[in-house]
Image (cartoon, rainbow, N blue to C red; front, side, top):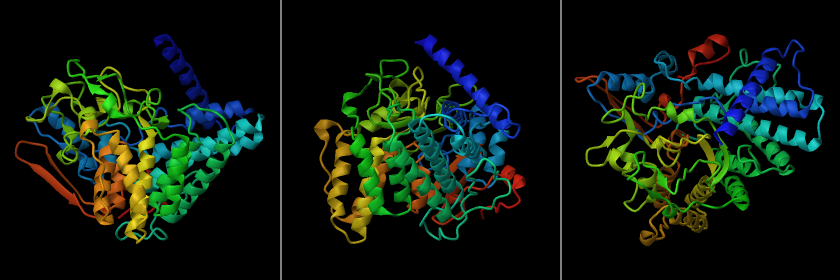
Length: 501
C-alpha cells in the first residue's frame, strides 16, 4: 500500500509540474492541450483544491476557539503568531505570513484555482474527446469555480441579508470568467452579482454532471452540487430552493454514521477510535458526498501543540468552553470529536493535542488524506433551517419537517439509551436550538464564521501574550470586522479594488 501511495504522489507531482508550465506559457503556444484527457489533468493539477491551504485561520476567528496562556517562550510565540487573526486585526493578512503561518493568502489562492478552471473552460471546445468526457470536465470546472467564488464573497463581502447589508450595492469580489482576463484591473462585483454567477455555474454544473457517470468520491458529482446549491440558497434566504436541493442531495445519499458504533480507546497512546473512523474520510465515511482538501490544513492550523513539534502542558489554542459546553453529557460527538483519554483532563483543562488530530479528522498516527468533506449531515441541517425560517415567516408546516431532520441526525449522535426526540414547536425556540445543533455538528468545517455572520451573532476573544498584559475584543453584528480586509498585495496589484471599511 505504501508503495502505491508513493507512486501515486510521484505521478501527481509530475502532473502538477506540467500543468503549471502550461499555465505559465499559455501565451506562447507551448504545451497546449489537444485532448479532453489533457484538460482533465490540467483541472486536477490547477483547479482542484488538492495541495493548497486556503484559510488555516478560519476557526481562529470564530467563537469555537479560545487562547491559553503559559509563561513559556514557545507558548507565547504560538499565541503571537495567530493573535492578528484572533483579534481580527485589519493587518492580519500582512502580519501572519511574517510569522511563518502558511495558508493565509486566501484571496490569491482562490483566484489561482479559478484561473485553472477558466483555462479548462476556455479550451474545452478546442480539444478532441467524447462529449461525455467533456461534459464531466466542464461540470467539475464550473462546480469548482462556483465553490471558490462562493467562499470568496463570504470572506470579503458582507453577509447576504445580515445587519446593515444590501447585497445589491455591497461590494463582493472581482468576477474573472476567462483565462484571457486577469483580476488585476477588474472592479469588485456586488454581492448579488457574485451570488448570481455562483448560482449560474452550479446549475449548469448540476445539469452536466447529471448526464455523466462516475462514483469517484474525490470528484464532485450531482450530490455535492445539490448540497452546495442548498447552501447557496440557504445563505441567500431562498428557503424553498434550499429545501429542494437538500432533498435532491439526500435522494442520492442519506446515510448518517451512527456514532454509537464508534468507541474511544483511551488505552491507546494516541487515542485512536475503535473501530478507526474519521468523519471526513472519503474512503470510510458513509456520509461523504465529496472529499477534498489537503491534510496539511489541520497540521498547520492553530489548534496544535505549539511550535516545531514541542508539546506543552496545554495547547496555545483549544476548543472553546462555549463550544464544549454546548454538548450534552450523552452526546457522542463530545467524546469522539474532542476528548483524548489520558491526554485530556476536563478538570484541569490540559489538552496537549487538538481536536484536529482526533476522531473527526484523523489522529496523530492516521491523518486522513482529504482534510475536508461535503457531508450528508449538512443536507439535513440546511433543510431543517430553511423549514424553520419558513415557520418563522408564518408557515407552521415547516416545524414538522425541521423536527424530523434534527431528530434523525441526533439519533445517530446521542447515546442510544439516552436519546429522546425533541419536540419544540415554537419557531423562535426551535431556531435557537437549531443554531446550537449546527454548531455541534459542523464545527471546524469552515462553516462557523459564515454562520456567525449571517445569524448576526457577536464574538468575544481574549488573549494574553505576557504575564501582565491581556488583549480583549468583541465584534458585534454589523461591525466591519465581520468582513475580512482585502490583502494589501491584492490592492497594490489592482488599483481598481476598493478596500473594505
